[in-house]
Image 1 (spheres, protein in one colour):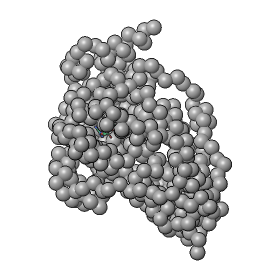
Image 2 (spheres, protein in one colour; image 1 turned 180 degrees about the vertical axis):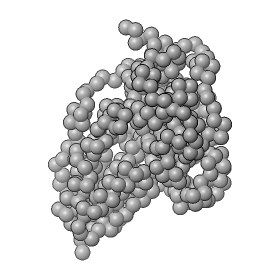
Image 3 (cartoon, rainbow, N blue to C red; image 1 turned 120 degrees about the vertical axis):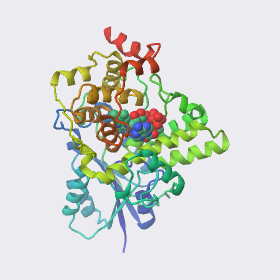
Image 4 (tube, rainbow, N blue to C red; image 1 turned 90 degrees about the horizontal axis):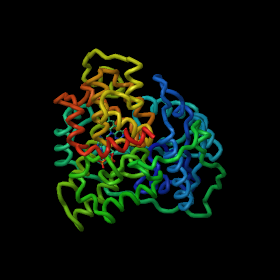
Length: 432
Ligand SMILES: Cc1cc2nc3c(=O)[nH]c(=O)nc-3n(C[C@H](O)[C@H](O)[C@H](O)COP(=O)(O)OP(=O)(O)OC[C@H]3O[C@@H](n4cnc5c(N)ncnc54)[C@H](O)[C@@H]3O)c2cc1C
């Protein structure tokens, strides 16, 4: 019997180290791929923010265009639609007599619901193959069960560093050209997703385009070309420019870069260039990323609840004016304002900035942290459900911070922006 595999792409938009793709190519004579720009992801959320704002939408478009080209070279067509997967995936299964569907395993409730609905619409008998492909440490390789994931990051990190190892990279082989299925779909424009075109702000710290190719180029530049990795630990709290941190999060967010790829590249760098605190710190940060994914696996929908995973009842307010001032960079704190303007004009904010504006929002102003998180979700190019909600919970005192700190924004500004370079960049130019 001829076997046809369908790879349903979602947040795993790459061809390197892509488990679903590798399996599909190994197990089938024909492979097709599908990506849906789900219109629900471009609607307004319950707080009135567009779920996927223009910056991430543009990055996603570029990513899917790149993926379509890369897959084409492997003789795998990527069919792209602006429609719900519940309609599109079953249609392809039927038309192409698909025998197996491959996809990344996602566990957050919205994604699960879509998967369940798709499965209900498929009437034929198909093998359904989901794989965890977003982690550094695969869930089968960590030395604890999900219900025993520690609340404290350091405990998690030390156990993983001691007992778990990162898997080797998976490599896809090209499908035979004669088995190539033609495809005529195209990637939508920004307008077709409900946004208007925009020019990139010349001040942006993230001037990069989306796609696996640019992600791999960035990895190469940050390591081998510029050797910035050797200084990462000293620069990572920076605020201005492209190189104070890796910017990998954007590509990691939609899966156009594999965390294992970064890990193995860092290891190679350590053996060929230098192994120091900075090279280690890159891996340390990638473990933070994993940690928030595991926290979300363990706590499910609690990560979206006001009382968080600690179930702590605090008084929160939803003062519309205070929220708008924060969004528009018009609070009493110039450092908060500069960061919020950066986000508004570019879809990017540094980690230092994010910590400060989130702490100001949730701790100082005591505003409902979920509104801040939803605004980030809308604006950030690198939005990732686990990292965003995990960090917001953490900063808001309802997550994993054992110290439950409030940032002193003025001290932070003096420490990290002593010469006002960052604040001048965003506050002075907005006067023109
Ligand atoms: C309130 C708040 C919201 C956030 N929302 C997101 C989000 O939606 N998506 C996202 O990817 N990150 C988020 N972060 C984490 C962090 O700010 C970004 O990952 C980081 O700034 C991205 O820049 P970079 O890739 O240059 O990071 P680097 O400093 O170069 O770090 C390398 C990688 O390590 C990981 N990493 C670093 N810091 C963290 C962290 N605190 N938590 C989880 N992973 C981390 C990222 O994958 C990052 O790409 C948030 C942090 C805060 C405080």
